[in-house]
Length: 280
Image (cartoon, rainbow, N blue to C red; front, side, top):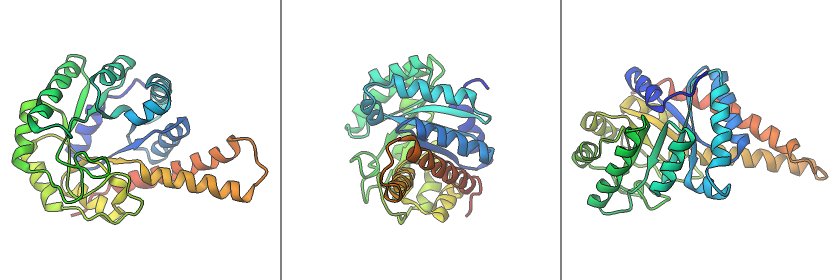
């Protein structure tokens, strides 16, 4: 099918008050697993590629083009999204490759500088029909908008969205990046206040640290896009480790990457099911 707009599937999810799963791609096996898991669930999904992953591959193009190819051939709507870009140049590259959305992260800058930089990126992307996510507050693990204890102020969020014209906003409500346990405590009342304040889809970063019931409640409270990376990376690595422990003479990477890919696909299917059933 043709490449899907992130904005279209995010708007549809928000209208239905369901969640939209966004999973990070590290290598092509991740992208294959995410698409396979979404096809099994019969639900849309977002493939996310971070600035760190682009750096790992030497540039955005190799993993970006592979992900775009998988998205175009998928049997369900699949969008390709640039995650946590701090460089406007990388945003321009992603748009040129065909990504339908970007997340520009200027959250570590002073508020006025964040507004100015984000507005410039939004203007560039909107001229090219590309959806823009931005970040406000402190989200832990990256010392950006989800740092421990910091929360996004609804009135500031309203002003930020108005000043930048972004299409979605990542907010700080209690989650943190790179958590290895699923015990983050979210502020569901704040999520609802933010939903009412900003009028655009809210994005939960650091969702690997949130349990299934917390994810479902977050969707019910007003969250739309849910980003998950570390949780799948843990599963991928655990599966590879178990295979290598049991097959000490293996040499072909396909023999252990394949099972890891399959395990991630199954978990993506399960997580998309969780996100499609909000609770209050």
